[in-house]
Image (cartoon, rainbow, N blue to C red; front, side, top):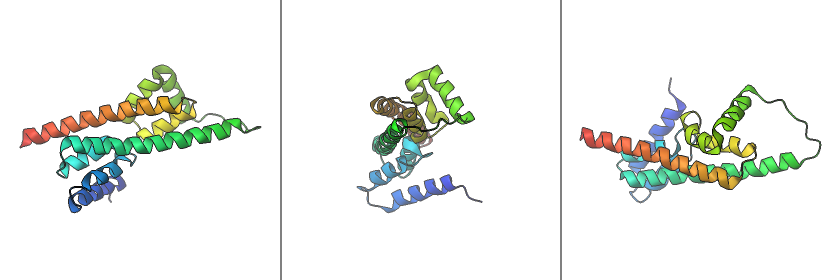
Length: 166
């Protein structure tokens, strides 16, 4: 039985190989917008597909960041609509939500943003941060830092492995 994420990754790798060089970074950016692939996975797809590591990293990170920014802006509007609605009933927090709230109070926006990609896609982390009332600008800034950090780290590792193996 195949894994949907690995099938998606293989599909993006095939697409990168099949399109003209000028279009390849756009495919990598599109891959970066997909949860669980993220900027770092997209950069890996691009590097393995033959794109220069810096171009692949930038394209993957930009695709991831654009998607995260859209999620944050939509989540912020939804939060505003829900919190301003009169008489909205309070719901008990789920166990998952309580776990997130504890992590948030312990590590703050920077910690959750920078460590979040180890557990969840950046889109999920960004939406959760926004739903707690953190400003959109703050969430986007810290998510951008996290995306840049993780994409750079993974890009350097993959480029190093490829250089070492060559």
